[in-house]
Image (cartoon, rainbow, N blue to C red; front, side, top):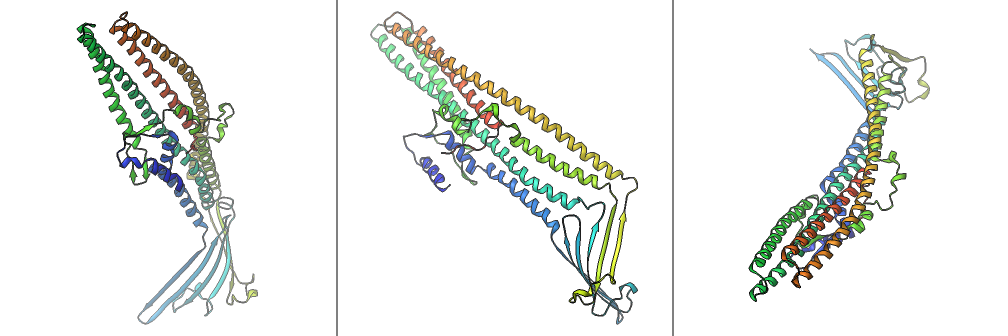
Length: 467
């Protein structure tokens, strides 16, 4: 990564010093920069950090717990009571709780059941739910869900990074399009200037009428007008591109005039977007991050449903504690000295529990429908994009042929004009047709690029190739 950063810094070192030469920024270099330093990509990493923090929180429900309860009352030189109750609890997976306890009570007005040996009383026991909370409980459900949240966060991060890379890619293609359009107008402005100078000289020696100089000047000013429009459009697209370029999370980069897009993007786009060896026919849609995220959501809701179903059972907790005055003697704990109890509760109508279970089932069914709809939608999108790409390849071939034919017609018309067999009007008309054809070719190429980016986005191919 250090070598990569140094290479990027070297590439952009000219941003702070004026130079006449230009530097090409390829799509792979640009996307590598976005993926490494853009704040939104950095923000996406927080999704995983948040899910891991929630997992730690869920595991905390199984942490051992130390509790101390001390209560004392003294009034008019009489000690009513002095009570100490310290316990150490260890929750386990299946709702069982292990417990150790020390109790020491003194005073003149103690409740008779609080009378214990002078040196205190020790106990060790267990609390077991035998109905609700045995096979599943809120602690178990939260931990299981938190583990799934970590996995879901990883695929959600991939989707978020993929979206920012897609938007950045489309911005780069728009930058390339405006650059190519500006180049077209620059080329034909040179032709118009040469033609105007030549016709003006011909008029001065009496070979051309004055109307030809006027028509040549109109054509020249038109070229200047469209070039200025394309220039400001290119400047705007460059500034838009700068929104995605950062040296780090706090230092944005502004693209200067000497930085230009890669004119050979068509030859490298598949390698850069990782679509060169992609077989759409054999693509496993089930591995798509969106479906994986929904599947984790479905599993989470299924855990919630099982918890709500378990809540229909009665709450029955059994407690049993061995008692001893001398815990250092292992045989002092026996069944002849114990404290036990049963705690039971059961709502008669279970309306809250049945309502919660019904809502959990509705959420589960809703997610199931969402998964089915997403699966079909992704398949149709991929199929439509594949056919659209095939169509743009055909359209590109047609426009290349049209541009080539218009170029030949313009060259022939210019030769006829200099031989005096044509008019400047026809030359300008042929040239305008050629300009329109080249702009149309640039537009179709840009649509092809954007469709490639759309395929990259739909398939969530966030692993780009960085030079």
